[in-house]
Length: 141
Image 1: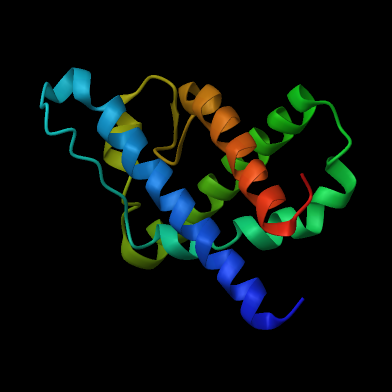
Image 2: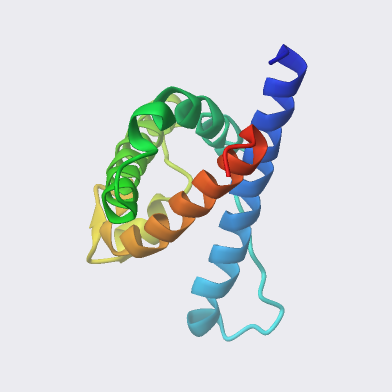
């Protein structure tokens, strides 16, 4: 596979990740904001973080692809929490603040303002959707 195809696939995964996040923030914040505009958002910091999706699946899928669905989803959630925590910590060290920490500190399920354990079901679904997109891109369906 050419570099151009790999980069295109990675950019598509970034676009999917950013889109999922925008939809998730719009829907999850609606009950609190009561704003029918359903304003969603993301952060520019998320582009390099979501850029890890395609290479991550490329490296892991050969080993994980035969695991049962629940096991794959659970593994992905744990990995997402590790990456989210580490990237948030690095951003905080570099800038003085992690962009999503305000909302995460407010939650009783937040861990150091860097991850929210109550988002595990959403990450479970999202990770399997990311896997589906990866399979489509690679022609593995």
